[in-house]
Length: 152
Ligand SMILES: [Zn+2]
Ligand SMILES: [Zn+2]
Image 1 (cartoon, rainbow, N blue to C red):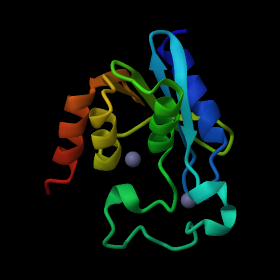
Image 2 (cartoon, helix red, strand yellow):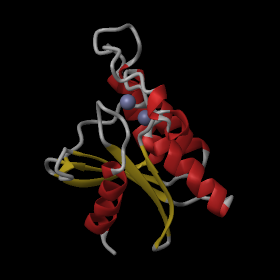
Image 3 (spheres, protein in one colour):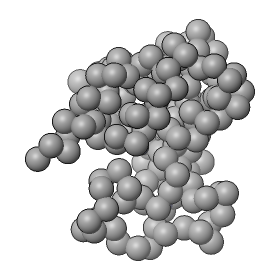
């Protein structure tokens, strides 16, 4: 499988998202094997726990915490650790999809929660599909860029 195939797999996860605001999905790949999967959802996949109806866009909460849901990346990382224990050297692919399941191109990195969790667990690359192509960020670079985003 190539990078586009892995993004398609992340897109399949994103289609399962239970968040009303954003359909996000992530997979973790080690070697050529998918070892973890996750989609955005309220706690325990319990839609009665959704907070999507709260309008958090203009709140003082950070950009990464304006969704009601567990991030797809957290869930993919935790799933991978449950499956493999050691996920050092793996790559995380993250994407959003639209209502029709089409992959939406990503903006610049900003989620310092996901970047820290990925870095702390030895994920080597954090992959995003931008308008100008697929980019594999070294996870340390991704973490630094995510903090840069919030400087102003
Ligand atoms: Zn939500
Ligand atoms: Zn995040």
